[in-house]
Length: 79
Image (tube, rainbow, N blue to C red; front, top):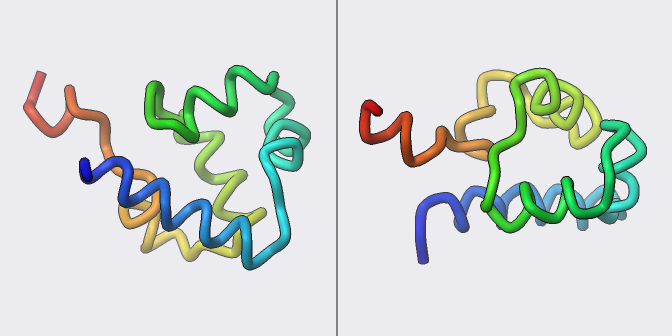
């Protein structure tokens, strides 16, 4: 399993703990279902503004952002 998949599993666990579903993320971020699905499947990354909103929604401490929202492959490779 890729590293990105593992981090998104942690986000999904937080969502389960809070009894949240993708629709709740859509409403919190003001985004469409395909937009959220693409990010939750790791095809695209959330923006930093979105990450801060999701951290508040999911009670993720800011010092743990990288555990839940990893950098993209481009950033990891220094592109």
